Length: 398
Image (tube, rainbow, N blue to C red; front, top):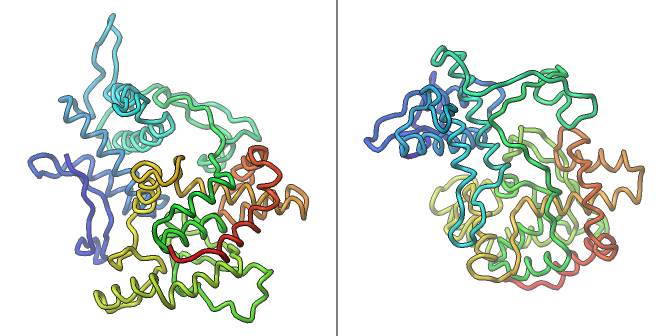
């Protein structure tokens, strides 16, 4: 089984339709039912307009259908009788198999329950689609409708205004963990371990703005300006537009960066590593450059490139002694920004401010960072931004 994606030559109703996932089997034949659903997700369903969402569904469908193929199972087969007359569906068997996976290197579970649930959510969508299309007579799990109390984390979310939600018995119970943050010392080690000016600047940008992985990778050159003449003590506002870059849910928002970081970004695109990589792209494509950050070949970073760059630092080169992901930088920014704003305004206003910087849909999502403030000491909370500026001012090209 292989997961592939369409390119710009794939046309639907006269419109180029790239980045749509599809499966082929070992005989290079299309897997029809899976592909029909993935096409529905990408083309018909209005709520899933992001290629990243399509990829998530594609990867979940690919993993499930690969498991089915390896175990000679069919997605639409009835439940099988196992021990003591009990019956189990293919979807439940797949969930149990996912839970049983163990890493040979560490002896730990390979998949977190939250990761398994993300895949199961996509597969539940597939089965509901199949039921609506008449491909199966019933869904392979028991479900009931429960009322969500007002104020609960799930209240009025994804329910089209109803206070009732469907509960299934296929997904795992997951206890929410607090977001993982970087301490000040860890941030220093991470920045000193960055092996290129490009990665160093991407790390700083995410620490200072809370940008997501895809937002940092597609951050446009047109947002960078010469800060000469501006007040070095004031942050510079940048209005993020989904027409210019990838933004989750295509929701515009504003972020603020320091004068010192803007100066570094301006110098980066004017000379040195950034200018060299831009020249490679100009010679190869002869078209507008788009994002400021390009890899060593002059191409935009792929979806997993930034994760892989950080993974190399802590797993391969051992340049840093701790695990780090791009999203941890976002969590770190959110915690520090919330603390900073809460010293200047009431907590509710501070939460609203951080919510808007992060692009969250509700204050409840942002409020988790109130608890994260307790995980950092007073020195870090009060001096973090100042010390980041000191690191920028004292840095040399890496």
